[in-house]
Amino acid sequence: MVDARREEEFTVDVLAERAAMTVRNVRAYSTRGLIDPPRLEGRTGYYTQKHLQRLILIRTLLGRGFTLAAIEDAILKSPSTASNVALDLLNIFEVDDAQDPSEIISRAELASLSGLPPDHKLIDQMIEVGLLEQVDDDSVRMLEPSVVRPGAASVAIGLNPDSVVDIVPHMREHLEQISDRFVHHVSRDVAQPFLDAGLPQEEWPAVFEKIDQLIPIASQVVVAMFRSVLREAIEVEIGHKLEELAAEGDQPSA
Image (tube, rainbow, N blue to C red):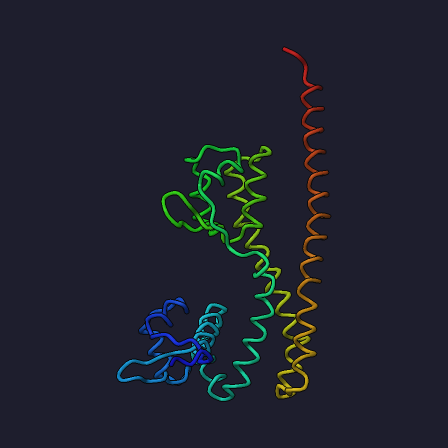
């Protein structure tokens, strides 16, 4: 009889697929001791969610610019503490992502939201900038529906589709700079004292609560400042247009 309480297990191929990395990398990390050995049944190894979480942690830290040597040093010196702290911090940032899950939509429906024909290039352009993911010939997955839908609405209102696609990478670039600066200060002011104190277990809840509270505060400030700056930019642009009209009116007629 199968024990229903047993944690889900999967082979190295499934583990690699879920972790979005190659089997070769999984085996390399295992050899280096970065993940625990699998449960063996004959010649087949079976992995669990804990292995997957560790691989996702490694992949995420590598994506943040950490070297494999630095990750290895941190995990092997204090495997439980380092992994738990990192995973807890990553889980905090995943809360907001869960509120905007990906959504599959037909190309025709998405085009109709923009007031465009189904074969318009906008959909392919959105795929190129990472807002959409091709599912099949007729459907796409909105990776960030809260960005895609307003973008489509902007086109329906009258914004040129090329303008929408042009704005996205610029916004992402500047928001990444803002995020990096925010994380730098949070790391220095909140996380570093915690690390310097030796990661005391009793202080974890307070540290994570502070970071959890700072995230929506930072988001609110960004939105508020953007509205203010946007209003100023609109006023300046209107002023320029009025000056151009006045200049045209002052020109002598032919």
